[in-house]
Every structure is written in structure tokens, then in C-alpha cells.
Image 1 (tube, one colour):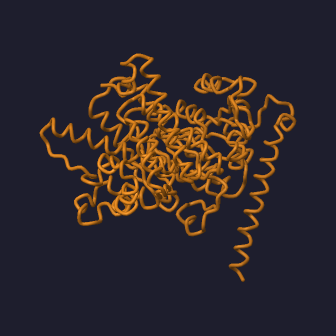
Image 2 (cartoon, one colour):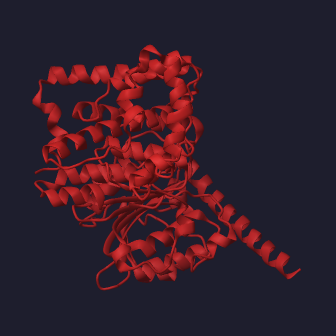
Image 3 (cartoon, one colour):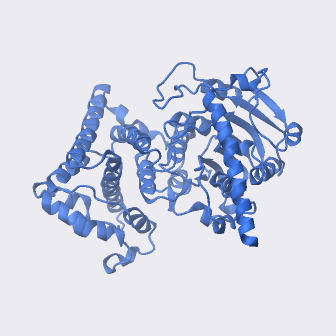
Length: 509
């Protein structure tokens, strides 16, 4: 059995048939968006509306498959959504659109919000799926207000087949584009800053997730890292056993997300990438943090782009051994505590974390002494436009089997990621990402790559800034946006220190 087997179903037909189906799927989504717009739904709400409709349609298909499998094995199967709550039942009311809308608003959504808690669904009280229903639909809204429009949107969703590989591939492409557009339109509305797919792919290729790994993102957002990890495993795993496939579905991908809408988007993204059993939790990672995580509960691979720039309340900081109001510092400690022995991590952090003093320096020291930071990829300022112009870096580190720390760090200065550094982020020639991936494992040095020993880093008070020694005067070669972000990071640290001093003085008085 191969994990890629289902990814090639579309190849059984001719390329002409596949392309025809791709066009049909695109037309269906465009038509659905047109209907939502004509119903007065704002573009930023398209994704939420389509997400929960996709989710229920995909879930109905999944239950149909499991019901057929159970019948083949002559074993019982109890549908979670049956009768009038079954997608195929209420979505067929297209000839009575006002009645359909009334049913969805008055019965279906309330039923899902309380699923497993009412008498008619009490048997599913401890079912993980029931809990997922409650999490997703506790805050989901039906933005459609006119039955006719809602009926037409539902008809378009009914044209999609989540069991058809061509549909899923095209849907995942369109869906990812919608997520990106929504995030750009509202500067992170759909969750934390949208992580560019090419950056995610590069990070995944370095940590190389595989069958048997437990893969974790403590702030999974729209599940980009988890989805790309699933795709990477599919491409590289080859033939696997049935038990390995089951483990891939149920015991491989883990994540926590704080925002209910983002949780829905991430859940739907995982379904579109063929993973039905991802372990996704709705909650505040920093509140759930523990400094003493048993080895059996840790993760082999952690990939993340934690939110940064936020300030955490002092009561949440008390969960951490090194207290800080900066979310990025708390998340970094959380990742360190949850990385298994022999595990690999890739984490995006803002530039300031590499050089700031105070708690940042103490966390860096602990990270360098307890983990092997083998690579730092310096990303260009503006890499995450239009969401933020903050300069960032990717830390790649492992938890060594011998418990040893960092011996030296290999740096790569990326100035071209294949897109211009403007809010438009248009593709350009000369991406250095292939060069980075070709050089990182052998740690080859050149004009944009170099190695710094732990002794030198210690002399610099654990400063990990990417100072290219091949440049005579690094300041002269820095982009204006990068210089501005560096100054802003230092100013933010001064403001943070003044705030801490103010709290101490208030406490004394």
C-alpha cells in the first residue's frame, strides 16, 4: 500500500478529462463566491462560509465510505449525522431554499453546537468527532440571509466530490489561495500571519518528517505546516502497511490553535489534504504549557511560525521558567519543552529574538546549551508582506541523543526568496532557496553562507544575529526596510524594559 496511491487516482483518466474536471471545480467555487457576494456577504467571510459547508459535505462522504466498508465487513456502523441532519438530506431541499435556510439556522447549527450533549446524541458524548463539532460550530456563523442565494451556494458545493482526487487537489489549491487573499485583505484576520508556502516547503525539506514521527505545530493557524508535512510524507514514504497508514492518519499530526475560526480553516485544510484524523485542539497553547513534559508525550518534529509582537499577561508568564511578555519567547520555550530526544525543529522568529537582552538572551543561552542549533536561515525583511515587514529568521535545531548543545551554527543569508519584497509579492527570478537546500546539509560556505563557533557566540553574550563576515560593512549592504526593522526591534525592547520597571515601581508603592 502506498500513501501516494490516492494522489494518483486522477491519472487513471485522460489528461483532457482531468483538465475538464479542474475547470468544473473552479467554476463551482467561483459561482459560490458570486452568490455569496450577491447575498451581501463580505469577501473576508467567504472562507468561513465555504469552510463549514465543505466540512459537512466532506464529512458526509466520509461517513458514506465508512458505512459501505462496515457493510462489506458485516459490522455495525452508526452514523454521527443521520436522518434530517445528514448533508444529503437537507442539501437536497434546493427547490425549497427558504425552508432549507430555516432548517440550517434553526436546527442544524444548534444541533452541531450541542452535539454529544443532548439526549439524542448522548452516545457520542466522549467521541473526539463530537468534540470537534462543538469546537467548530460554537462560533461559526451562517452569513447567508436569503434562502435563494444560500440554496445556490449549497448546490455548487454539492457539485464537489471530496473522494475524487482531482477535486481535492484543485480545491486545496483554490482554498489556499482564498486563505491567502483573506489574510492579505485584513492583515492576519484569518489567523496569525500567513506563512508563504515556499518557506514552509523549505523548512519541511530540512526537518524531513517521516512515517512514525509525531509532528506538532503549537499555533497551527490554517495548518500549512501540518498539511505540507503530510504531503512530504506521502511523496517519500513509499509502500507502507495498513497499520502504518492508520498511524499516519491518527497518530502523526498534532496542533493547537487559539482562534475558533482559524481552527475551522485549519481543520478544513487538513481534510483537503487527505488527513481525516489529525489531532487538532482548540485552546491557548501558552495556558496549556508545562515545563515538565514526559518523553512519551513529546514530538519528533516541530514546525511553527509563532505569533509575535503580542504581550502576554503575567499570570500566563508564570507557567514558564523564564518569564517574558513577548509571545515569541514563550512559544520558543514551549517548543523546547516539547521536542523529543532526537527530535528536529524549525521555527520562524523575529530578528529581535537573536540579539535582544533580558529574557531573550537567557532563552538563547538555554537553547544553545541544551539543543543543537545547526542552521539559521536569515530571511529578507518584507518576506511576510503584506502582513508584516518585520525581518525574520528560521531557527533549525535538534535535541541531540547525547544531550549536548550547539558546537557551531551555519548561517545562510537569503536575500531573494523568489518574490519581490513589496506588498504585491510578485514572482521574480533568482530565488536562493534551491541553493540553500543544496548547501545546508554539508554546511558549505560561500558569499552568503558562513559558520560561527559557539565560543564566538558566547563572547557576543549569546547574540545570534546573522552578520555576514564576507561583507566589509554590513550596514552598507542592508536594505532600508531591514535597518528600520532592526531599529524598531531595539526600541520595542526598550519600551518592554520600561514597562517592566514601571510594574516593579508600582508594586513597591
